[in-house]
Length: 112
Image (tube, rainbow, N blue to C red; front, side):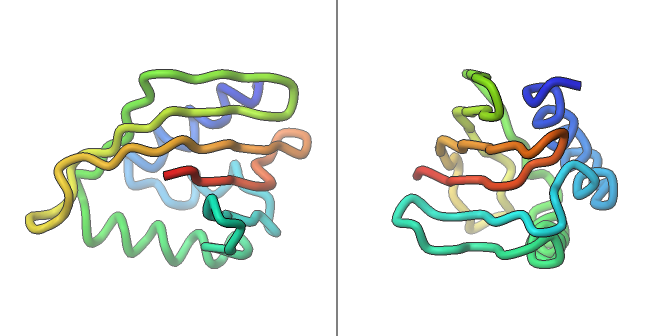
């Protein structure tokens, strides 16, 4: 699969609440960073814990991708996130930059 297909497969697995399948697309030492460079999640175990909590707290969360660009080992997604539980935001918009190492997501930079 190409990187753009891997990102979509990970999102599809997240929507299906299939945490194991979702994480199968991530490198064990994946790093998720915020725009300012701070680390939001360090390693697949941290991603797993955050995603499991998110799936539990917001069971209807859905990621729409109006734009996707793929260049070499990078995939850049414009995200529109909806389905937060009551009291949460109606819509959250962000840009995510995925960096691949082979067939696994090695790093994600969240711009929001």
